Image (tube, rainbow, N blue to C red; front, side, top):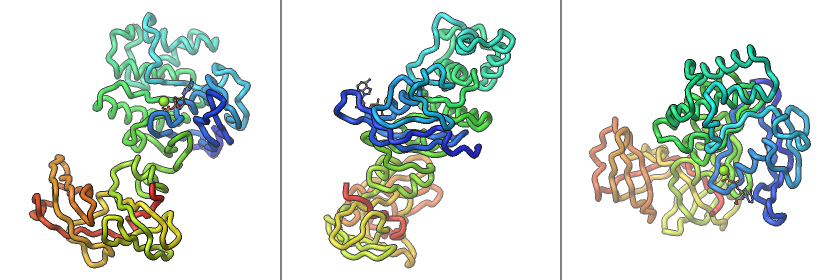
Length: 362
Ligand code: ADP
Ligand code: MG
């Protein structure tokens, strides 16, 4: 990755389509050259709008977008040096694979020899060398999407935008394409801005993820940070699985707080967004951070009753009633056969307060 940390820069960008409601609010985002960044969020959170503004098909209502230090508001889309792959951005059906890839190069007035070389290179990048003369209709869905990726890369763009490019593919194909796109990114180092509503996809592919909700970035961080250290209840809920406890802070010090639960009982947690006694909070705990028969060092230790046991191949998913929360989930690796895991059994469950994040009450 190069040193230019602000290769793409959104500075105080707002967007309204109707002059009233902001669908993107005060977006400040720096994307490094060569980075793979993903905008992740529920439908309607403003992701596509951000890509459209970067591509030049929409104009920010306020603020400015910079590419390599230059404001781009007045540069038309085809002069921005940006490649695009969209879920519904179909190939030209009446053109061969070769012609589809040659098209963006012809527009840029590149010589025939050079076009042949670039088409060859782009097709081998997506493992489709030899498919030049096929028509799109003669390709599978996955192959068509690989041609679309090759077409976005063929003119050596500075930035490639991908908006839910794998959304139409079935699960297995989608997963293998995730790795394929990730590997292409690693080998050529192009800057990628990727959009998805699928958290697994975002975690797999990205250097960093910007989580969007309601037009605002909720958290911008690496996949592991996002999963391990969500900064608010929205992110904790949206990324991965999450046991929650609602309650009120009884006592708080620098790195620990005691929370009285609405359902009765008390737990210890990590005071991420609470500061004082009496505040409402929702505590978030990842299922894999809760252990059966904890050792004494764990500062939370409670009895839970097994309500449901579901076999999942590599692990068993256990639903418990614990401290009045009957949606408490535990994931037990199937390598560690545990005789206590039977419907109706009472088991001891523990966790470290450091892993239980006391967040906003939402
Ligand atoms: P996402 O890609 O995260 O699903 P979008 O950026 O497509 O979100 O949409 C954000 C909001 O802007 C939504 O409320 C959507 O209805 C609205 N919106 C998107 N495109 C347009 C448009 N061309 N005209 C008016 N409203 C739009
Ligand atoms: Mg969208």
